[in-house]
Length: 308
Image (cartoon, rainbow, N blue to C red):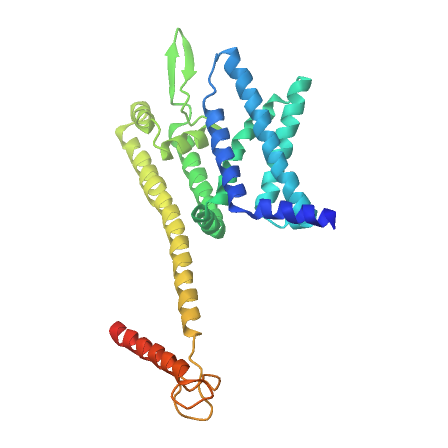
């Protein structure tokens, strides 16, 4: 009985809205503390940040232990957000223990994943992520089409500009970093052009090394790759959000159509059920109660007339 009382008390704490808001505030403060770190910072600030990391890790570990105690191991892992939180807590604890031992400093980067814990407290963002996950099959098809497109233009670029993006310095031939000399560098160069990062320089190098007609290759790459394919990705995402919105409207209309007024099987008023009392018939109640009911009926009819 005493253990059940403790579990019920912890359940009230975990299920309360103040507990969730406190965890959300802790995540925000922890995010800000990670953002103020900079290179060659004072030793005092480094120590303060390390202490804050231990405090927040302990707080999140306490949250995990309370949920395990309240819901149990199987009830805890039923929620995907709890699994994600548990993995982050285990990695954070491992990083602190490894740091004291003199290693595992690479695990410090996993602290940034604590920011993703905010998704649990933002229902609107959760819905957006659900829609994105539903469009993953179409996005995967788009990625395959994009890779095929990059591969075709990389092979074409190797035939047109292979071993031509080079300059001579002190008698040595130095290839440009953006070239089509191999399939790997051709894929990197085509991808850079699709991102519009300094792509005009690659255009000028192609025109200078071959002829002015080389501009047609880059125009076709930019037109079909950047404007057509990437707009296709945007269209896929927009279609996913529209389908989600249409599904919500259909669910709402279906729920409204299921609402029906009870029908009297013995005839008479269809809006009146058998269990509904007749306010105008004599009953064993006193006249005062009947007058009150009549007044309520009159007020209801008056309100319906005003709405219509």
